[in-house]
Image (tube, rainbow, N blue to C red):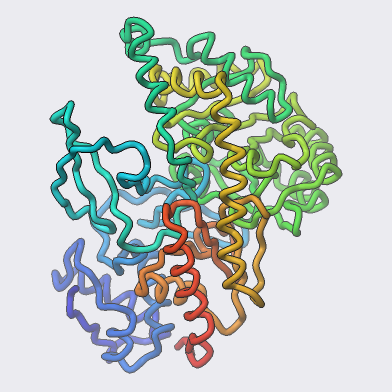
Length: 520
């Protein structure tokens, strides 16, 4: 940590802005270098005689200006010089993303390494390990008796991960056996050579079968394999938007959509929501006055608000989409966790719907397998986007997922996940009695609305200092963020760690001194 203290004696304006600009001046003068860690919020507040809230606001302003970047659990650092992406302007709420690139949260949003240990069936007996420090967790590179190639196995310590929405699969060895069967079933060359961007016919048939289980047309000609749902999302937006186009979404949305907006230079605007999702009359008014190009929605088990649109709401939204010829991109990644939900919104407007789904939440994000389901007239254009971005989806991964679909494993995993999510939710809700929590009984995350006296970013910071990683509302907001945070509880193998982590959060909620903070 750099013991740098700014001189604020000659500046004018609010203290938090003077601190932020002092960081920029120190970089220009060589007093701070890219990668230097800035003083902690509390240390700097003490030395300057201001509140912690003022320093928090100053560091946030420095991030907005591209001068610093905050890493949950590690601190705030001076940014490395990077090319600035074009600013993303939200109508009524100008936002400059600068160096800020929100970490991905949904879909393929959760890229932390899975936590596994010798009890999960993946590590054979008679192995040797060499400890390696891997940043936020201890990792042993383990060698099997049959190979000299190491692979990492995470040990259950380090920060408790309530940030990443990446449910762990059941601890069993079935996938191991399927991989062995693939290796023994014929020449592997057929799966590792170049293939068309459309995928092999039997792969598309399996993905279409999966789409059919959710109520969509199971015609394989309407399905394309992708390298995960996030890749599918990128391809769909590349296909149907151009720089300057307006894209609508829920006012709380998957953070990577904001990153894609900055990269592709389309404008992003959130649509007001209630407990079911976006409001049809607000959507209709925006379509009449703003001429949006596309809308991205998560109607079932919304991330992060846990809401699911009713059948009637889906009909109303579909009527607005059809009335204004608005293209729908629907993210269905969490749909399997709510089997009682209505059919996908795409079923109500099939001629203008691009539906995205995959196996990152039910099997594992590391496989990088998803799919696009679209009207046949758009398939060739979407396939061109796949070829442009990755040429093709990996054949071995597709073959594995195809077999897991056809032998019923994915449906079995989905059932297991619903039961496991419900069990873990009981631990969470049992500790957070009396707080405003939005949840679904078989979902892996909750939305915790915070009391007025608690500042979200400070709670997230204090939780990180106590060994718990959380995601604040700011990561999801398109516009002004609400006061709250998402808590995801699928990434931890140990329920004891989940219980310990939520008790830390409870203690912070009960003992916070934020009500005494005054932002200068």
